[in-house]
Image (cartoon, rainbow, N blue to C red; front, top):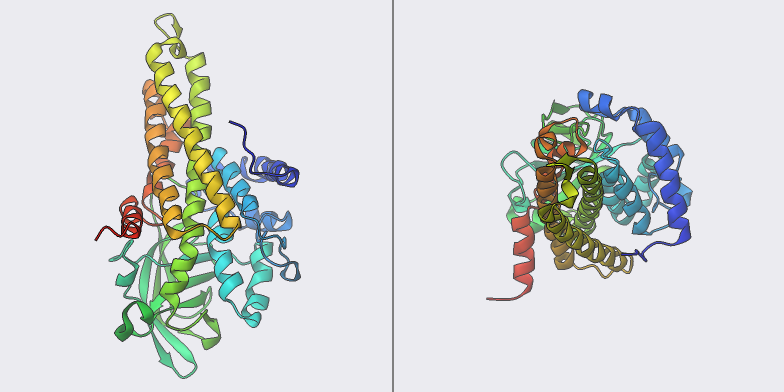
Length: 381
């Protein structure tokens, strides 16, 4: 089905980004997977070519265009190339809105130029060892000390955790106020007491640096409070729909690329004297997967349009996130089955896609949490 989402300028951007991936990512990604982290140089090159901070005003070095379609192109092409080490999606889709909407003028001048050049790599620290999707269970604590905050606690599963230069940390600042007692503090790389633990050993996304972070009496200046004190939980809820849509964009792109490579495989691979694709079962399986892929694509593209119109609700973002990622895993599982024994070999792209996809239904809010958000909106009780 023909897509109608993009304009000619978007396709020019896509062509440029593909060239960037071919020249600066493809030759290096296997090495990055072995190292568990990408080179910082790729961030600098992405910044130089305008692939970071597309929505950031030009005065800070950004693209000056608030249009999520550009973000979607970066995610789609990165996903189709299986370049899972690049943390650009988190940087552009998740962190940028916090800095653009919550940072004051001084903070914007301090952080946004480096954000756009790739000199400042960003992360957000929500999840803790004892709390996953339950954000209200966060125990990391920040206590006032004059104009500063003293931060203590630990976070885990933090994307860009090794490379990050600034980390938005969700912390309790007034435990007596419940959900209204959380604030966002920006911790910078060299602050005493801020340490990085293991670069976590995951089953997929091998080149993506996902780390444990610890805060031991970290003195965070008052000027690093992001947004309004006590409004941290509200700030998170306002920004989560775009994060969840970003994951759905990834799911839709992965479904398309895995479907394509599987169709090509069954054309070439022969069994019982003819291509696997000539078997009725193969045709029926792929017909079903092709239909679901189109349905996911249409829904996700519609959500992108709604987001650009500032009309994407948390419930619709939750629908897009859980449904697309569950369909992604189902499709890749069936495509791997059609590869037979070769699908289990890590040298085949479908095997890598299988391992990289498994986290999609977990991070950004689990499928179960997404269904809870949708269920509550139905006002059934």
